[in-house]
Amino acid sequence: MQGCVFCDIVGGRRDAYILYEDDTHMAFLDRYPVVPGHALIIPKAHHSTIVEMGPERAGRLFALVPLLAPAILHATGTVAFNVGQNNGEAAKQVVPHVHVHIIPRRPKDRINWNARAIPDAERFGEMVKTVREYLARQPAT
Ligand SMILES: [Zn+2]
Image (cartoon, rainbow, N blue to C red; front, side, top):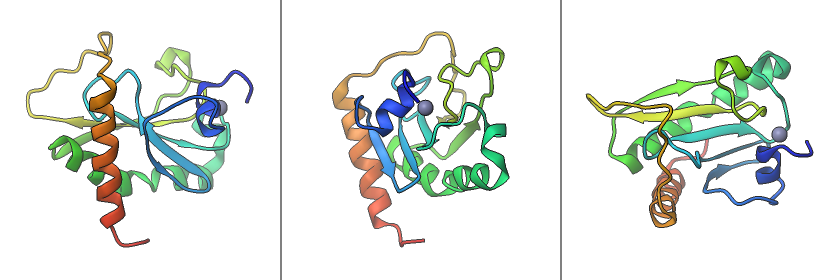
């Protein structure tokens, strides 16, 4: 969709730290992470909310969580994570293109949703490399 940040990433018109890509989905690091390794999984097709996707497409989107989360945990040295999926502005959906958040968590960490740090490119790049290497070692599903 014209003017959609995530559609621009899918179309290669905007840069992203891409962790994973297949024919229908993509995962990349959140540019404004609440913690290091905060990643997003999106369908390549534009849908504003999960309801618009319907059950089958929504299922395929969430099916990527158990594939990608272990790679992100490996890259961040964490063992726990939250999955988040916001629908609508009042629910804090910032980009109106469906996305699933994977947020690595540590014991006693504190997430401040309003004070997102922007890591440097080098740190993002290392994370991408580590995640991709991990995924490459996994057997094909
Ligand atoms: Zn879009």
